[in-house]
Length: 392
Image 1 (spheres, helix red, strand yellow):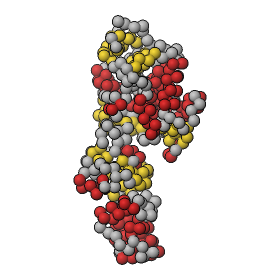
Image 2 (cartoon, helix red, strand yellow):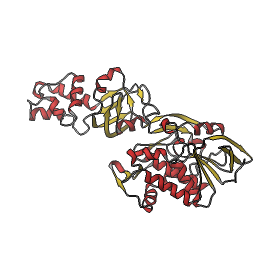
Image 3 (cartoon, helix red, strand yellow):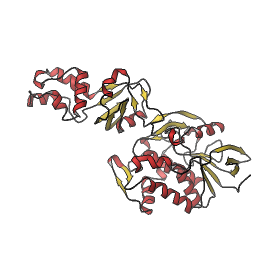
Image 4 (spheres, one colour):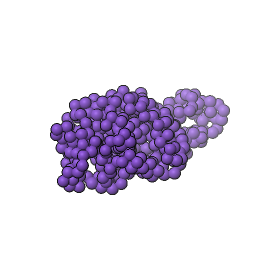
């Protein structure tokens, strides 16, 4: 059975898909929004600890990873954090800024999902939930999508089904499979914003599970200054999640456990209070358990006055540049997003449409554009969804 035609069929009722649908619907387009889940915005609901870190006021293209670092500029420039904040405020949703420009709902992430659903309803968007796509065909300039035994037709198809991160939420590589069918290239997907696992040589640190400390972490020329968290399997916390998006397997990361102390700090402490144990001085900057573990690994301790200046300089140098070589990551199960994806080389940065397949669009996490932790990926979802919704 064939249902009435639409102007566009959008696959995926997440952040990008809903933004695209409401934008196109508000322009008078007949939109069908499809999702295999029984409710829209499921990943939105679990984001930000249930309060949805919906954007970041410091959004800029250099805070995104992509094989083409310039691709995101157009969409991000045309739909800004201020545009989304205006939408949030129009719906009376209270919000607050946390650290580093991160904006959260005062209440619940449910408010963001309800806002998007309300905008879609107001724009006349038809939503079909709980039905996986059975088939996609393309002929004579039209896309035909079969769901629940019905065939729906439109001159435009939008892939907004995200990547495979958090499979327990129903995430898959569906968008990549469809893209490949239409000849679009794929940049190798990988888990991003994901905790690290550590090998047996760092077993000492897994005993610190639950201990957190402010650090600066570095991989090659990339640095992040945020908190690190030791887990029973390895390293997590904002600093580690951030650097994980850049990290390559079998390479070390460097952690500065004392980012606020000058190189001769321990020497100054030695002269000021020579009888103070090194562990106690270190514990003024780090959790006591962590200070003890680090000193055990270094093999130094005792009163400051009993250590030579050379030994104290060496201890500070090690604490300021501590190497870890992760054995891997926690994978897609714990990754907040997926890096890589549908190659931007195949897409128009203005409209998000495939250059070689008129009418085929791809937006959000499915595309090879991955933001930092802290609301950047939501802003890409809003911006790319708005770009496609405006172009449909």
